[in-house]
Image (cartoon, rainbow, N blue to C red; front, side):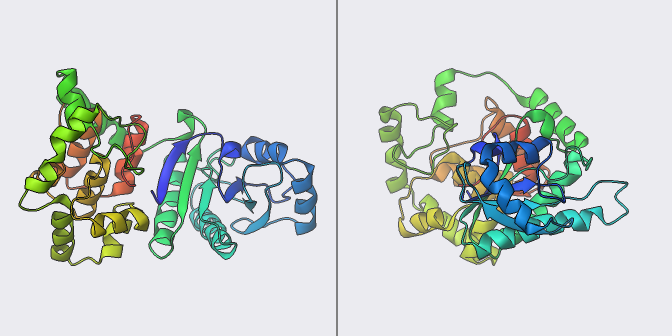
Amino acid sequence: MPFKIVRNDITKMNCDAIVNAARPSLLGGGGVDGAIHKAAGKGMLAECMKLRGCKAGEAKITGGYNLPCKYVIHTVGPVYCDGKHGEEELLRSCYRNSLNLALKYNCETVAFPLISSGAYGYPKDEALRVAINEIINFLFDNEMEVFIVVFDKSSFKIAQNLSADVREYIDANYVEENLHERLFWTTDIPLQNEYAPECIKEESNSTYLALGDIFKTEDESFSEMLLRKIDESGMTDVQCYKKANISRKLFSKIRSDKYYRPSKVTVLSFAIALELSFDETNEMLKKAGFALSHSNKFDIIIEFFIKRGNYNIYEINEALFEFDQCLLGG
């Protein structure tokens, strides 16, 4: 998917570029900065010394050296005072300038830490909001795969009231059901579909074969319904798949194959992008052999947002990440 939040060590990310939340000297420090310098080795430090520092909000690039990435983009985030001294604009500039450097160097994949949210004191939920807004604004005009990498849950905070509301909704609606029924409805159909997310597993070939006929007996296939809904929405194809956090490659496969068998996550990503009602979402899911269930926390979180008319896929993904669920997109 074009944008994803992942839990990992950023020095282990196999991307074209990783972004370093650097100090103005660019000569290393603590936290992410120190970890990246240590992993990259003395070669990167020597190159950084030639750059003569970096101002807050700006970005400079070096080689990746011993890291698994081609480049390291060094950006200096603002020190948070009270939010009234230009901190947000400087933080936005960090993301914009880093992404533009990545574009200039033909990077297809870029990984960011949550800049300024550590020792520089930027509130984590606000830092996350700024990061996501700048990244999605960039992705509307550019093709790139962008990650926000968090090392552990303590590094990631969504708005407290949202987290509490989602948790309350899950507690009120979650029920245990027969395991076979849960697997049936949450299984991704395409056994060979490379876009199916790893955290949703196939049940068996027999399930695949039993559901396979759905796609050829429906009056309208999932692909046909999706394209019709896009036309009715007034969006272009590009606007829709970007809003759904879906890659151009995946959308092209869906458009070119009337009987394309999507994963459940893919269906729901488009339903959110198209701002379908709860009933319309279930109708689209049915075209692919799925349904929402109160035996699945992922489904309950999706239902929570749809029934409240909140179709911000990135805010939904924040909540899904908070509760250890798969993210929307593909």
